[in-house]
Image 1: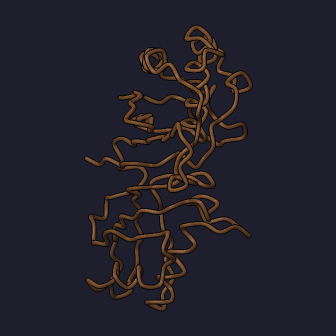
Image 2: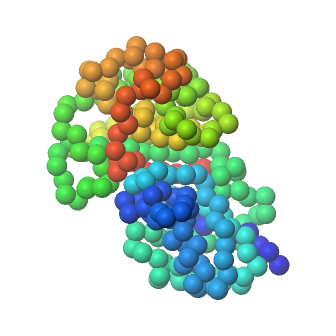
Length: 243
């Protein structure tokens, strides 16, 4: 009998070319599928809640798979025992046959971390930027961002999206000590969208771009005008919300 299971996991993406399995590249999906095969002797096809780019992390990632293999309560423990230390399975449980890790998601939340003082313990997990940022202007830009729904200007060239429409529910910057955090929540995201948006926001914070520039970039629907994306190391897929 074929049953469907849900996986919840976290990973440090530094050593991986993203979640998605690909030829001749190390991916999180491949690592987990190989571990499952080693434990059960049966292959599976994991379906993830979305792609993450090379070097991007996930605090709460969701995937599902179907199998007729016997799954016991120890599977998460067994997977963790042979997976590398930068991937952790938090939960493995049987789920309803209608559940889909990607299409059942109601919203996704990302966080981008910036630290303003060199810190060796944040290496590969935050973007070091010592220049002073105007967070008030950056939060004003967030209000502008949420007034739009077409983000073609922030989509990586060559991406295979059927639509560039995204409904942003939350966006904002916060600072605590030497750490600055950008939080953004939407029903869906385009490839490289968050890093491109943060890049423009940082420019606004540095006074090299204005809020009017942000409006022009969005309304142009042309990604050649959006500037430079920030490094992947500071980006975390933070939460996936289901009904």
